[in-house]
Image (tube, rainbow, N blue to C red; front, side):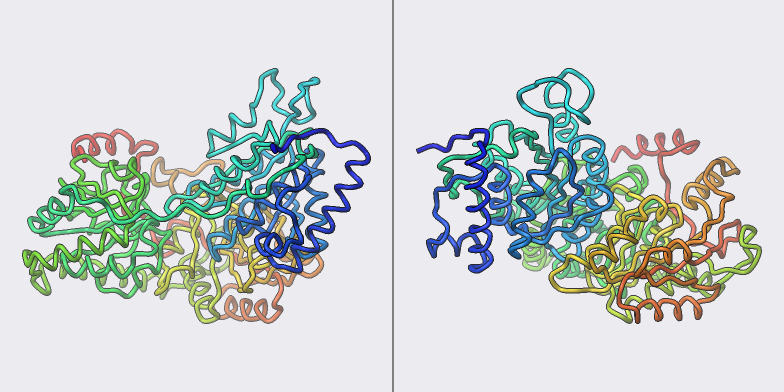
Length: 639
């Protein structure tokens, strides 16, 4: 017997509501859909609305957290969620902005591994959630996005649909940004959920999945729907790269190279031990992505820290002087490899990746397509068994890199020793951004707090100063560079099954873009502190303009904002100034931590030409007046 869908009659709805309440209560008592089915309290074949089938399907996949900005395009889903939330089966968090919801769901999955779904309406709300999805897409984080869509009977233009007489324009938009599916036919819900699970639970390159539900289809009743059609289970991880000669070729390259650099990306998150073993075996040094701080401990002698246009002295030295490159789980984005000019001496690349396009990014590549940890175990064993690599310890390469790492540490220490400078905007001595960020990071480590860092100058400063020894302490949204991510990410503390304290480091411009956390954080019990580093400008862009053209333009503001008063205007927010010294900043952090709720610290920071007031940049980038030189270098290198 096949399920069939029909528009609900009044009698259908009464029976449906009664059955829905009973199902929700049985699910709460038994803990899962599988348990309820096994106990026989929920039959395998039921009459159910599409919206409830969706919630049941997501429940089967472990999705119990919903962030909602409900509108006329999602009222039916909202009613189902109300019933299930009342029974304690799901947790629903009403939000004030769709982009905030997307960021919070991304942060929850990233920091805790817990799944979440963003639910919003058709129209501008969906577009705002889509914009926020860029962060999860760029950083490889799986998040469900569930939007209303225009009706399928095409009775005329629907309010807030894309105003053109064409079908599925929201689907076209969503499919451009990621994987997407419109449930035009209710019976396809099982397929839609499977495709969604394959995306958000992809073991190597997850992302957002856009599930579009036409307004008129949401309440459609599936008669005789078999709940076994709701898929369960995530796709399995890949194993090691297959052996078709790639391992032996990689070994030959490593044996004949004197200066090996290993570029470590997000795909190496589960492979830290094997990466460190490889470094010792090949006498190599690591240059790490900002997104994987701690996978290789900061203090590891072979860790040259971050590289690229916002990297470090030691990281860029290792990239510049290397003669062989091993890439592990990296996409090689423009800033990370200096727009493909970061490895001028490299002629051969070994790329361990699960994505074919990323693996074949460079020319002369030996691609090992497979899981990083599993592939490295085989490669490391081959190296040991071959007896062909007997590194000289300490080798000239290792000593040169260590010397540059020591130079980098002295460079940072010099700037941190000069903690403040006279700022022309504040007309007094205020903390420099490096001193402020270092103090916040040190304090957060002492409290075992999770740090989220926003885009801009604060972000680069944070990953240049980060000293994590474990992965998962610091999260920098470097993929989409989405301003406003860090404050919104604090909301993850309100949703996580295991509570944690969050610290958001953001600029004044970033906070103004996403202040809704002040309301939503208090409403739902977020626990964390937002530190607003205020230089009344977009410091990263002002600095880039000055470096390129000698002047900054349209990237600063003369308007002062009383951030403390703003935060205090929301009942339940603890707010204070961070003062002008490391001591006063630390005192403010302690005060906010004692409040155990949501808090905000306003901190004026220095911006200017004093070289000790910032950490600077050490790489190339294909932007502005540098374009011709960088592009010539890229084609000269031909890597």
